[in-house]
Amino acid sequence: MTGNGGCLCGAVRYLCSEAPVQVYHCHCRDCQKASGAAFATCLVVSESAVDVTAGRPRQFNVKSAEGNTVTREFCGDCGSPLFTRAAMLPDFRIIKAGTLDDASWLKPRMHMWTSTKQPWLALGDQLRCFEKQPPVE
Image 1 (cartoon, one colour):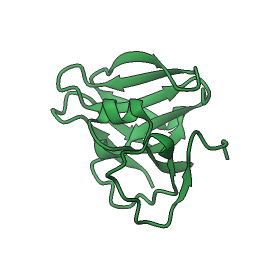
Image 2: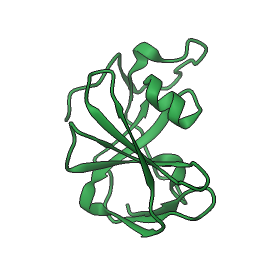
Image 3: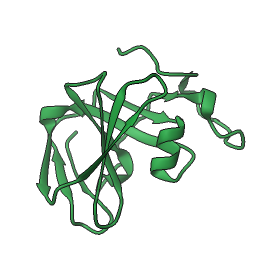
């Protein structure tokens, strides 16, 4: 499935031309802070599948809990988180699911970083859970 997406104000728009290789809910503290929510739902696609068609995302680099460089891309106008690039996955880009124009087709396959999951959040689904970063499949 392909999809269009963008930020809240519309300044940054993108087209994703391939189906994701992975869809997951991330409960790491960085995703919690960057999203302002208990977790971020993300889809992993090949870097070449994403074409930014309008605007230019700003970037912010952080070190992950495992010491890897993570580049977070967001709209410089409205602040919407759009993409993540991780040094450990150089050929891929991670799209924040909430930025898709239509995310109804997504089927998350796992929860990751549940060791830092908010204690008030009950995971009632039957998805696989990983306390930290799962092995790359």
